[in-house]
Structures are given as structure tokens and as C-alpha cells.
Image (tube, rainbow, N blue to C red; front, side, top):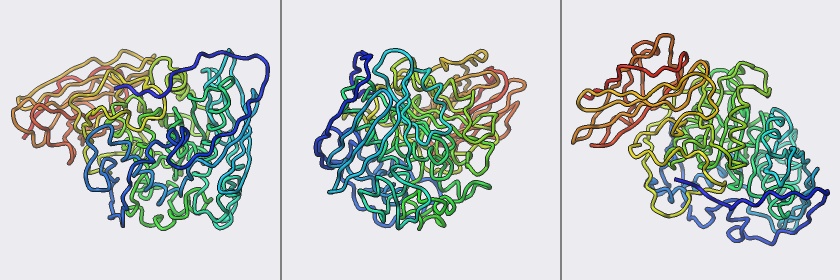
Length: 563
């Protein structure tokens, strides 16, 4: 499956400095090109959800509000609209429809933005730092100026847009007296939190770039990143603007990628009440859920799913408990199931296996996948990294947090499922025909092209009558690898449970395993089904994935049995 949005412009460059000034035509919430690109589900009917039932586990991202489940890729567009409405009403506050008018300038050094809506106006600016070479250039909006590896962004061929979120939504204010450009227009008592206000600011910068003529910056190749509180903002910006091709939150902590339900039980992570009270980051409505996250109608895995199938690279720090990296891996793994269902598993990457514990440091471990992501999603070069590197010390168990199964969505010809962000550069060779149980989120259909660490483990398989177990390498590096095992039903009837035994090479140890329950982490390892993927129809298959440390050697003696 391939996803497309815009044809790429020739990259011609005008050497002289210039400024392009424009006015964005008046737009209603459901009309106009900008409205369609920023959010393509405005025409989707979203029923009143009513009072959500309490759910201790992560809500099913594929369950529609009418009680049915998503079965085709085209249905995801309107399911995404439902998630958006639930997230706005319970977590972040409303993001207004595209404003009545936006004017601005783009030059080689700066962007100016002036917005008028509902009879009120406000302005803000952003800096521009261009890479070497000839443009126009793709650009990454960097929120807050800390923690983003701007050197790698520029060396990869993308411009850096330095955006001060405090111009749009200030910290240090009460919830009844919020300040900044967003609140100058929509009111200081708006129940929309700062994260959504910052997201709105990123969208207005994109409006300006779109209308600037594309001589300095390319309108259709935009990324967003930031660290800590600005990582939260980058995550929300990518979820709520489908024109963003690549979203890269760094160490976002509570209120960012970490699953709310998991954070509430993670020792040492910033509590929900603390994140709500520290600053008005989250919407006012979230206050009623801080002591009861099970009542939330959404969780962050669904916000990750809102980004799908566009590029997403999540970076987390396992050395600072306050950042909730265990819950971050839960949110990422849950959201990756949406990517897999849409046939875009390669487009999400996650990396928390880092040595330096300094908050918002530029890390060498992230440099390679960061560059690959920029090249793939903003430059249309190569393939996405598609890697999950979860720190063994902060490894979440998705099986503990879900009781739903990932569907095999059919491609019904209904168009791209909510895509707003360019080609799918790393689709790895088509859909997995047998996927019925939530594949390994790092599935990219082959080896990591940036791999420099050892031989890839080979394919292997085994059988014991009722089923077969087949291994393949997803990714490998110096000191470890990521693998996937397919459990295939070879009988004429349904399997009711399965068990896979495999032998790891000497020195290997499993640090993280998903979509299965395992006993043992080295030597002979036994993996059994989870409650939701034990039933495998005749001719069908499910998969489980894992990350192992040690040499990149395939496990041996794979056998599959079923009761």
C-alpha cells in the first residue's frame, strides 16, 4: 500500500533574499483547501458519545462510536474524526477551524504570521535557519529551541524553523487568564490548553509557508519536533495537522506520548494531577480525569494513531523516572497497531535504548534514525527506519493493557485512510496477508538500511502438526536485533490457543516481547498467545515480536503446538 499527497516541486533556488506576502482566503470549517489538508474528516458525522464506560485497559482504537469496528482502510478517516473529537473534548480542548484570514511573510531568516478570526487579530514570528545547498528546502518546526538535534536536521537537508510557543500560549498563567496570540483571539478563559494552542501556532506557520510561493521553503514537506513540554506540543501538533509529514516528539513525558492509564500506575512517573496543575498544558476538561483515567474515552495510543500513516519518530529517556518511559512504550506500541492495520508499520519508529540520561540531550543513538526519517519523509530518499528500540529498564507490556485484537483492514478503494503527509517511503512491500493479531510495530519488510551492526538473523521455522512458527529479522544492530514470529494455522479448523518454543543463541536475552506471553528470556523460551490472539482461523496467522540483546543470530528449534 502506498500513500500519496502532493507531487514534488523542482528544487530551484533564488539567491537573493526576498519576502513573500500573501493573504489566505476566508475559510469555513468544512471548505477550502487548507481546511481539507489540515483535517480531512470535517464531513464525517461524529455521533454523541454520551458517557463513556470506565475502561481499565486502553480503549479499542478500531471501535467506532456506533458500536461497530473499522474493517476497511477508508473507514479510518472517519474513525480518526471520532478520536479527534474525543481527544479535544476530554484531553486538550478544541482546536478552532482554520481562521478567517492569515497573512505573513517568508524570508531566508524569518517567518511572520498575522491571524484574524472572529473579529480579533494577533501576530507572532518564527526564525528560519537554512541548510547548505540549493532550495527550496523542506523544514522542521522546532518548538522551544531545546533538545532538538538541529545540526542533524540541517545536515540532512532540512531547514530549521525556530518557533517560540510562548508567543502563542504563555506558561505561568492561571487557567482563567491564559495569555498569548491564541488566547488574544479565542479568549483568555478558553478551555483549550497550551499544547493545543501551540499546535494551532504550528498550523498557522504552515499556512504561511503554503501561500509563500515555495521559493525558500517547500509547502508540502514539513516536520515538527521539540523536547520535554515542547515534545508534548510537537506530538499534539503532528496529531492535529495532517499536513505535517514527520512528527518527532522527544522525552515528552506525561501529557505527551505516555499512556495516561499506564502513567497512573508507573512508579516515579509524573502523576496526571501534577501534569495538569504544573501548567495549563492540557485542556480544562482533563482535570476531571486526573484521579480516574479509566473514565477517559481516549488514550495516547489513539493520538499516536491519529498521526498514522504519516511519519512518526518517538524518542524517550529511560533514565529519568519522571518522564514515564515505560508508559511511553505502551502508548507507542498501542498506536503502532494502527500503523500496522493501515499497512504502514514501517512509518513509526521508537527509541528509548540510550546511554546518556541527561534530559533533552542530543544523543548519538538517535542520529541515524533521525536522519533516515528526514530523508524518507521530507526528502523522499531511501526508506524509513521502522525500528523499535525499547530500553530493557523501561519496557512496557502492551498485552497487559489491551483486550482487543488488531483487525486485518481491507483496502476497499476508498482512498488514503486519512493521509496528509506525502508518500509512504518505507512500506516494505505490501500488506501482511495473514496479519490478524497485531504485528510487530517495527515491521518494515526487511533489514534496516542503516544497519551497521552484525549479520542479520536468518529466517527459520518449525511445525508440530496444527501450526507452524516462522521467524524473520526485522532489524539488527551491534549488540542486538528485532525479530518477528508468525504463527500459521495449517489445519482446516480454527486454532484455540497456541504455544511457540524457540532456542536463543548463547548470550542472547529477550528484553521486550509483545503480542505474546513468554516464560524465560534466554536459552529455551516459550511464548503463548495473549487472550485476544489465541483464536486463529483456518489458513490464518498471527504474529508476535521481540527485541533481543546479544549476537544477531536467529533463534533455532522453533516449534508450534496448539491444544
